[in-house]
Image 1: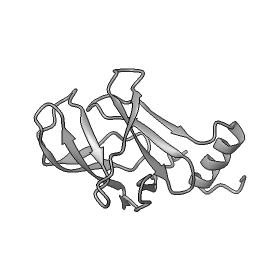
Image 2: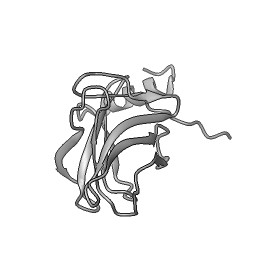
Image 3: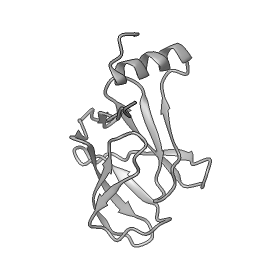
Image 4: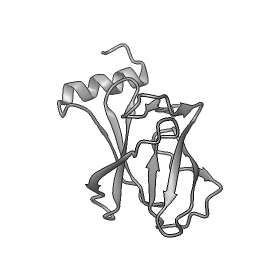
Length: 133
């Protein structure tokens, strides 16, 4: 059995700009510990926690993320249930949203929608392009 990869097509929740290019999500970041600012590229493959950046990022660093197109903050007023850092959010192009922790090394993330299980199954079917929607 082959493992199917789910590449998330993500958009800015403020301006709607597409932020996924290929298998990467391009964002701007501000590292709280060092006050560095610069580009951050996250893997768009669901379950892959790869990060590419020229910033000096250490395990445990918290990064405030923003849209590189409109500069709007992607941060939420919600704390991660695992580590307590702020959560960030991006819209999924096919509906719903992705919330993820802003702390380097924390794997907390969640797909969200309307809270209705049928809507979530429909979103998953659209993302995997299955005929069951």
